[in-house]
Amino acid sequence: MDQIRILLADDHEVVRAGYRRLLENTSNLEVIDEVACGEDAYSRYCDLHPDVVVMDLTMPGMGGLEASRRILAHDDSAKILVFSVHENEVMLKRALDMGVLGYISKRSASRVMVEAVRKVAAGEMYVGQEMMPYLVKGKLSPDSEQITGLSPREFEVFRLLADSKSVNDIAELLSLSPKTVGHHMTHIKSKLGITNIAGLTRIAIRLGIISP
Image 1: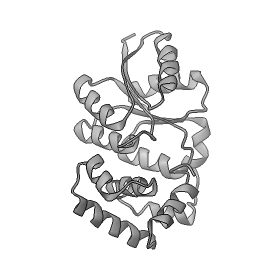
Image 2 (image 1 turned 45 degrees about the vertical axis):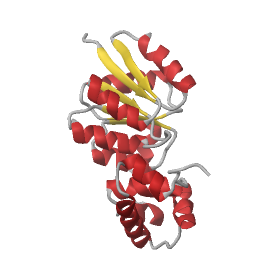
Image 3 (image 1 turned 180 degrees about the vertical axis):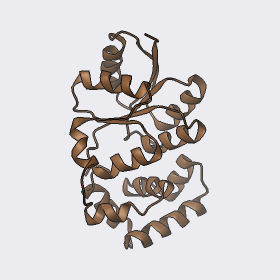
Image 4 (image 1 turned 135 degrees about the vertical axis):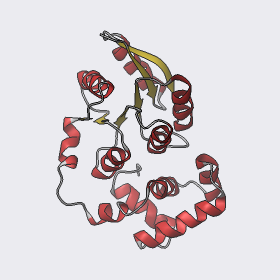
């Protein structure tokens, strides 16, 4: 069986160490590098071209969704497995719509991580059992329906604004001009029918996109 080369992206060193041990103690799985932020996940992917990226969504700076979008824009055959505390239809739909192959919760059993990595490495979709209710959910909440109207770039700006990042901070993180971020912010507020950042933050918390 061919070796599966894995890039592990998570901002918690203890989490990375635990899952590195789990993966490397499993036959034919090898963690070739680990990173703590989205920027480094993208950079190391371009350098190493691993078989699978295990991607946390909530990391300092550029989040896992934006890092995944950039990786897939660079290489549309990239195989990404999201591994996150976020268990909701918004994050699941965003990830799958952009081309991420797998999504599991951080409360999954260790055997699930191993199974998911192998499935994703083979080019197969894998959604953890705990996420299935969100995958088959027929009707989105009103907040969720509003959010689906945001483009991938608008969603990332929305997430960062809700997480108290300034326009200048977001411009630097996403390699945009402050003016462009300002335009995105105007469109986001218009689409969501919200006039201030506090309103954006409340929606993000209700949907589980950020923690209170």
